[in-house]
Image (cartoon, rainbow, N blue to C red; front, side, top):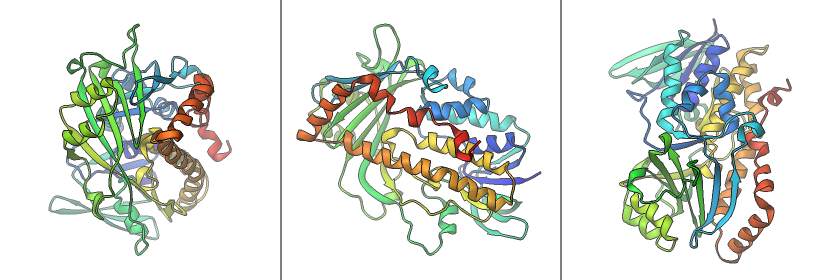
Length: 406
């Protein structure tokens, strides 16, 4: 049986383990953290991702914890006026899979439970990748587990170890490949719904909405989690560039006074949401130039390790899930492991680059100010919700079979 080692048990790594096991591989999954814990935050699971989770048999378990929003309401920051409402009532019929929002930890737990039940997958927690090298038969891998060093022999190694990937750094040793500061920061919080006098994401009929507010150099997203008991908040703002060590400032506590002052000119409803957050965590947003290839021989990258995606399209996790399915599909084809991993890399690069570029453009559009923002608002209203929704067909209705021409 072909043996794959995956470094990183985040959403991409867990999904890849399940997809490879389903394809007949033996999988060893190593994760440096001592437990599969995620910083509390929400996640949008668009149909292009939920379709894959359904294929892997985990979607129904996730549905029990997720919320299917009735739509996305786009508002102007200062006045709270609705610019457009994108109905998601027919999302499953339109894109053949549901549009869900969920707590990130809930998705991770559902995936981890499925991994634990699969006899083809072995998970090693508290085990950090220390090094690797290619051999005549595959890859020799060294990992640290506390004070112990352990080795693994595998046919292939997948680096699903995030934007600060150890696998990527070794593959590109000697090349200039540092994450690039974008001058934007994501502030994230989870608020108990009971702390809010009024839920702006609740409709009169009891269905929940996702809210998107557009303002000068900032935007705010909120949506319900866990049946509406919690509200997820994401505020992305432009901030002065951080120092060269910005990538070490990961998920650090943010001063509520800063974010409150930043949204002082917004509508009262938006300010109430901001004020209700008991605490905030800050993520400086990083970007990276595209790689010419995601693999070198029997070693390949997946998810943020291969292609960080800015959050304006909410596609970071979704693209890692797409990667996982494409990886499993490529590895069941003919040819050597290196040839199959190269086919995986080629199959994904155009798709991910399109998503990355669309996300970058959307970030510029969201944060417009002055006459440009007025023109955006007029265009959005003129376009109408039906035609605006159709602009997401390429993303949410993506056919994975087209990647390999099957």
